[in-house]
Image (cartoon, rainbow, N blue to C red):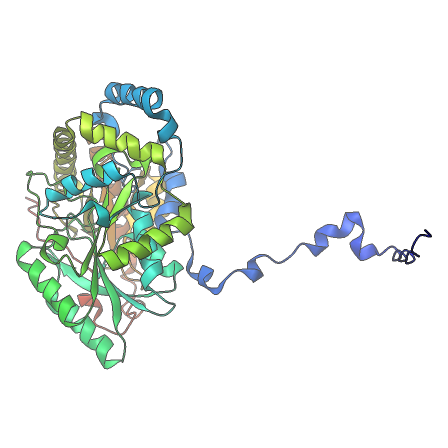
Length: 462
């Protein structure tokens, strides 16, 4: 049989200098030009940008919120890790359910019971830290341009997630007792008048990050009632709830309204942040979507980490461990408050947290904490400028100080250094006058004094 005729080989193109090897770098694609529109809101937070400098050993960092793990029983944990690998390594190192290991979900319901929550393990979704849970919730509920209500100031990680999904943040004022119900109603009325609605209210009711205040128990039912009346979902983020310095635990919002509250929890503050184990407790309809979203994001949370947390809860006095953390952080809180009263110049005010990690400081008019930060770092002290905790440019007179990680001696020295920087700033203002910035940060046009967050109680500075 004769072979079929073959088509002639195509002629090779003449050499083209534009495609020659030495010049191929000129044809590198414009990858940033191909990014999705939603990436425009994805920018590095001021807090993250600060870490590289604040981690220098000569700098006293009062900026980051890293838990202090010195109180952890590392010998016990080492044995538990070895036993986990030896006895259950085949399971611990394997894939698992996107919803999380069942025994850990059962144990999480016991942890939440301390705050009055009667949850079912089937409604718990384990996530890679509560930050992932918050990101998934935002992904499920927010389209570009949707409105999210959040306290002013608010957690910087939450603001990052909202920006990544192109949600618009409307801040609601706080005072010494947390979120102000009248301010929440006013914000919702303004949105309704403008023909808009809020997808959800994001709140940290206990030992707020960054403000350090706690939502008064007397306000909790009122806040929930307002959200019900305006058909607004509540996202309750509660990583610090068990870290009250007097041992008190406040009733979770979820315990008061299970059908309209999604609860976010974490072991990062009460056990080990590096394991990245958090969770969401959600109504069944939301839970199912969360599981699907988690599958698409990570397939499943790390099984080893979950089983490690489960063994810790089952084989260790975790309540006693939380008590040890509370005592350690209370000592550091007391040291910071004492140092602030001793060293900070007059005109400064600050919150007095009853738990958690943070103090929120308001400095005298004319001082810009963001502009001052490089000078503070030069003086070997770091803090978090208040502007990083707002989505609308406010917070230039505020700063967040964290007392959780440094030793008491370092806290005192850090505040002393900060006081020196502030004194120098005030000397300059006294000499040259206060700049007029009253129109620079009005944001949505509302009264800036009502939207600046807690300006601090009246601390005893005598």
